[in-house]
Length: 210
Image (cartoon, rainbow, N blue to C red; front, side, top):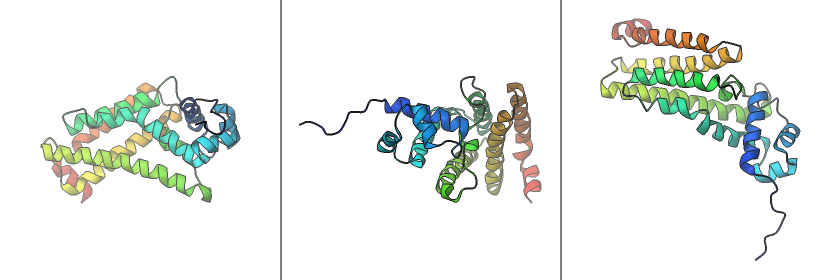
């Protein structure tokens, strides 16, 4: 039985990669549908037919980004035997990604987000949910450290420590975007891990959070 309609004359996978590069470079609000059509080499109607709206396309782009560029830092949290080693590895994997010579020097999740337009509220919340999931992943790794016995802090300190390291991850991206070198970012990680001992010392943590 013959299928109706014209066959696609483009590779959706390649087109999605081109859209990712453009969103990464210009951000969500700075990228128009015309820009996407030109970069992807397809008509706007084909974008709608294959990917849906601009917001739908952006969500698919972020899914791809998460499994490629965002994957190494998340995997680092699970590939090391102690919570401290996992956090250190996560931060170092982050700078590996944000200093790649073949990509913009910042995390797309942090700096491609839309800002003020009311109509972009759902996209902002979509990205905020992903960032919250980063915090949750760090918190769960710290909780595993508690269960394994390599981390000893009050239970109510775990969320604050997790949020601190999530903030460091986001700050590394901003610093890289603003021109910080690889050495500069390594120095930030050195400081962040020097803070680990104070943050995970039971007495110091109780004092800081009290």
